[in-house]
Image (cartoon, rainbow, N blue to C red; front, side):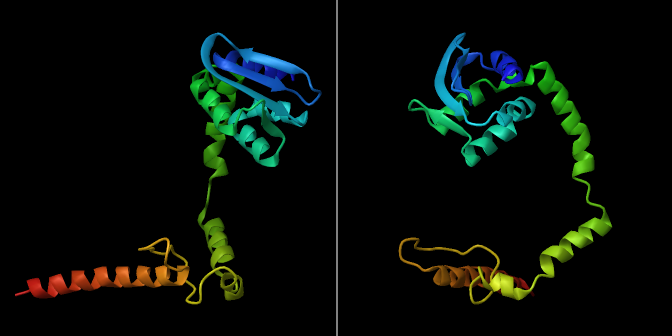
Length: 183
């Protein structure tokens, strides 16, 4: 908790963050300037290092995994508000500056998608049996979103028909205008 505490002391400048650690100890950060007051609990000691390394990523993952939970009437919205009003403080912390430089330099390598790899990714996605798609697509195997004209009374099937009518109707109108405009 030592590294995370150091980060939070620098990060939380506006408002207050009360953190109950995995051992039940309460740590208070902030209180310099008025702002949101939030209490959270960290249920796993492994989370301390993860939050120190990348708080933006691991706070969200920890919340989804149930190992970071709001307490004392706080909500995840309150936590996000506290985070957002203090975000500039995060970027000024030395280790976070260094981490961001490293991530930026590795991003190009990490996101590289050379032609051979891109082709393999495309095959993996498109060469899948239609049986899989039949599990979650409609009878016409439509892969794009539906068009609901009346959200309360139309079925998904009707909305899919609406989409096709809308798309082909717009195409017909363009064609009719072109034909009528020709000499």
